[in-house]
Image (cartoon, rainbow, N blue to C red; front, side, top):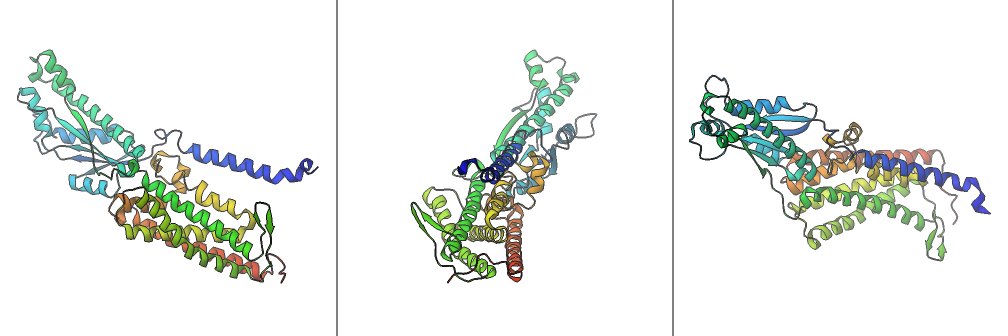
Length: 410
């Protein structure tokens, strides 16, 4: 019986086992401990306090809080960026920081007023979030800034309760002085209500990758079938067309030309489904379509080049290149600053990282080049050029060596 032949089992068993192992390591390895893997998550610190320093001190309370926030948290985990209010707003609007801690202009005056009985409102430090960078990254930044603000409030409370002005205060007043600062949270850079809490950029980029990947493989198998280099099976019907005498280079050229044409349709359908049918919030729609087409095309050309070079296992290779390695290193759901170092390395060149950054810039950050769009365009150009050079170099080499796919049968 065929089932008893070891060689029949060997290759499928080895490949399936390795794929299951690698996918489990890749996908689960990046999400298990975001807080433990934090590495320099960028957060802005804004000290707008204009008050004079309290008696006997060289800095006002705003400067003291900003300094304690930066010095009081592990530098390896967070990258605190000192900024003016205008600079912080620009950082939030370009996706350069995951959040901000803002100390108001009257902070010293409002804290000092607590000890004189003239306070009209509790001093407040504001935490600004940036949901356009994803709900998890924004949440991590908010937790860090809220914790830092609370520690600063307790430090200020020690100063106030030990001052002579607080000696005669009643227990209720002393309780307020011990933790005098309130912390409020606001959205620093709002996004649309139909933006999936900042996740539409990731899923839209994933759709582009899958459209390019699946479309490229369908074109690859369809052309091979039409040229007689692969069998066609539709249910119980099995056919094989006469083999067309064609070189590998000509075949690849045909597949890439068809990819460029069919990608127009797939890109349009992705946008119709997401924006017209489902109502996804989107701006700069013409630019989004052009970007989506070029992104899908880059993936599709890469698939054709890999299939031409590796043959039967090309689909498995391209699956790892464009999907398995790309999704966990995209930085769109789990910030790369909260992932192990291997994912930060992969994110430097894996396509999902570049495409999700470009989509995010278009959808959430007014298509600003410094929000990731320029890098995405550059990597698309590099990807297209790499696919063309690699694919045609391999097919020309095979053709020169006389490595024909099949002996032509007219």
